[in-house]
Every structure is written in structure tokens, then in C-alpha cells.
Image (cartoon, rainbow, N blue to C red):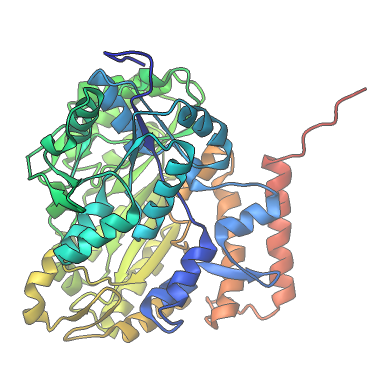
Length: 544
């Protein structure tokens, strides 16, 4: 760890904090169990021993483990720390996961000058508020900085006065509002280190005369490779994440990410290769997740990366987002040879009319061919669907179901469309008759309640693929669990058994009538016991 001053920890980056399922379920239950929010969630948990349990909690209960995706090293803290160290700042990162608490306590005991709170997956300021409270308890003298998507989203959706009130309630000292933010954070730490005034740093909200004021906007752009050699002595676990590009080159009308993230910029392949060698040299890495929104676009660059990985004979498995409409035999062969284990497919719809409104630049026929080729190559696939987008009808949903039944992805998931006022489609709300926001909407061809019914239809009628819940057990849990040693077969059997119980609880038969609750529960427990025996055996007793 390098510092231009002394050995004091100058910035500690904190990863995701999870308030748990009971908090999340209670928050959505308060909106009403018939709300779109709760009906989405209801497809994510089952009841076991009179407790509502998401699938990961069920797995933990049956195997006596404390597995959670937050144990997986997240890319944001890793990248931010690497960038800050490159700027001569003594920085480190940690998480709140139970197995990392000793490390977190040790780092907080150093009384870091600045504690930076990332908010990539925070949907409510209540979580950030709780993190700030914990930091205040552990290191009262630290300057607490909160940044990331939560701040950006709150500033966009709230009136200025309400936004400033929320900032006060969260309780941090400084807030960063910038799409990337690493340069702003570096300037902020240097300013504080020198005893300067945080108000001199752009892209920040700082306290002034009893309220938070904005210091003004300043453009920022960086795409620095992660220097994994910074973490040679740090336990990062068997599953890592990285990225090879910023933003997304497509402009799908349902997605606001490219609007927020700016233009798509790729890393040089020589930098990607250097990173992958650093990861390979860690020796304990089993799984690597590329978080690029479109890892396989453009195809020529993707082929170069795959051939580079094959040439270097990297031993880790890898996972990524993928646009399967451009897949062909050569790409699938290269992916398999380079140890691709699974891909997230943003299919969204199997209807050509809906895909056109979405500007997906894809056809159902291309999707079918791509999913079949991936399956034939032994690559696990997850098809993600949006149900109820403008243009959606009962027939278009039937077309999506027909596509999935023929393509047979390993896993799938459908959620009703979330009407986001930042997404490009919102600019065409008059054209499509869009009214409402979030999960409560209507448009020319459907309303949110019909959308929920269509999600149920999807769950019921797609019978040759496994439904994968969103809460704590979406696609990105798969590399984590496989990094823990679970096989695809074990995961699929477990999910299938949970889905049987879910189908009974929500009254939706999935093509195989399941009416005996006791038998279904016994099967789930048996699968859990098998996973425990194979992957988490009891430690051997010491011989006296």
C-alpha cells in the first residue's frame, strides 16, 4: 500500500451491505401484497418451517452454511482501491460479510481518514443510512463519503429540497454525484489529507450553512485496468469480477444505463491480458465474472479476447452478459475452449414487435439459434425477460413462451416491466399511452396487473427450463456457488425442488402436477443433505 504521507490508511472503500430478506419483504409488504412490487417478490421465496425464505436462505438452512453473494469480491471496491493506490493514496477495501468482519474491524481500527460507501445496488437510502451509522460507531473521526448510483438516482427523481433532506438523513459528510467518481474521490481524499476544503472539489455535495450545497459539475473519465498485484496478500475468495469496457454500445429503450454511463469505451486487449494473468497467478481463483454489459460486442474484439485466453491456457471458468443474437458455431467453440461456464442473456422478449419497440436489434430466430448453439456447446444459459413492455399483448407473451420452450435455456426469469422515467421509452410515453411509474403503469396494450398475470403464465408454461428467482439467487449467484464447489447439476436440482414448492404456494402448476407438499419438501431436504455431504462435510474430529 503506497502513500505519499505516512502509513495511515487514508481511504477505506466499503462494499455492499445487506439488511436481509425480512427487511426487504417487510418494506415491499407495506406497499400491499397485491402490488406489482410484492407480486414480483412473491416469485422469489418459499415457506419452510413457517418462515418465508428466499432460495439462498433455504440452501443455508439445509446445509448449515452462511453463504451469501456479498462474500464474492465485488468489482467496484476493487477497482476504486486500485485506482486510488495508483494515485498515491493509501487505500483498502472490505465488506460486511461475516467472514470478513475481522478484516473490517482491523481496518476500521486504523481510523481511516476517509471511509467511502459504494451504493451500486442500494434501492433505498435506508441502507446507506445504516452503513453510515455503523461507520460512525467504529471510527467517529473518519470523513464519511457516499457516492454511486443511489446518489445519482435520488438527485434525479427528487425535488431539490427533498433531495437535500434525504442527504441530511443519511448522515454522511460528503456526497459524490458523478457517473464514475474515482477521480472525484481521489481529489477529495487529497484535499482532506492536506487539510483543505472539500468544497473545492467538483461533483460533490458538501455542508454549508446548515444544508448541503453542490460544488458544481466537472467531466470525469477513466478506464484504468485493475492492478490485482495490489492484493497479493489479501484473501479475495475463489470468485472474482472484472470488466473490459465501460458502458454499452446499444441504446435499448427500456434501459437507462447507457444514458447514465456515457459512451461505450473498451479496454486495450493487452491490458485485459495483463489483468487475466494477474488473476490466474492468484492460484485459488475458480470463477471469473466479466461484468461488461455486452462482452461479445464487437464480435471481432470478442474473438481476439477468447483466442488470447485459449493461448494462455487460463484455468478459471468465466461468466458474462452475452448478446446471443450474434452467436455462431465459431464463437461458441471458442467460448467453450476458453472455459466459459455460463452466460446471462438479455432476451427480454420472444416477439418481433416488442423487440422492435425495445430497439434490441435482434430477432426471435437469432435468439433461438444462439441459445441452441450455446446449449450444444455445454454452456449454461440464463434468459432474462421483461413482461409488459409497451406493445406487449397476450399473444406476444405466448410467442416468448414458445421461444423458450424450443430454445430450452438452462434457467429463465421474467419480471413485469418497471417504468423508469430515465429510460428512453419514457420520451415516447404519449405515443404508447404510458401512464404511471415503477411497477404501477398502463399503456395502449397492457396494464401492470395484466403484466403480473403474464409473469405467472410464463412461470407456469415454460416447463423445459428452470425458473431462477431474482432475490439473492439470480444468475450471478451461480459463479459464486460453483466457486464454492457446487456443480451445475446440484444447483439445478436444488432450484427445481424449490420451484416445486413455489408452484404449490402460488397455485401455478409447472407442467408436472405437484400436489404432495410433504413429498416435495422431503425431496428438497434430501437434495440439501446431498449438497451438504458432498460440499460442506463436517470437519473431522481430532484424534487424541
